[in-house]
Image (cartoon, rainbow, N blue to C red; front, side, top):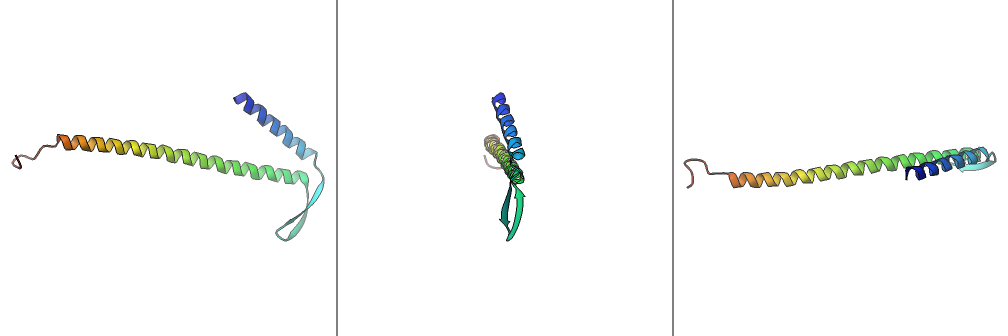
Length: 101
């Protein structure tokens, strides 16, 4: 599986380099009420950067969700243990001397 992932990553890197090198044409962008003349290769680089930032954000969200799930499981286990210990303490509790039976 790691070999397939490495091959796909290498193919994507080669494709990215080819697209950057082979696209020197200029396009006109209308952004924020301004016109800019930009080479297509820089648009591709900007797209790669935005994609990388988005994937980084998704990875961070995945880590947070995994951490929350782990903490939720630990909290549930502690709750079960607390109930079990409370039942054991209640079953072993004896009335104080001089009180009750």
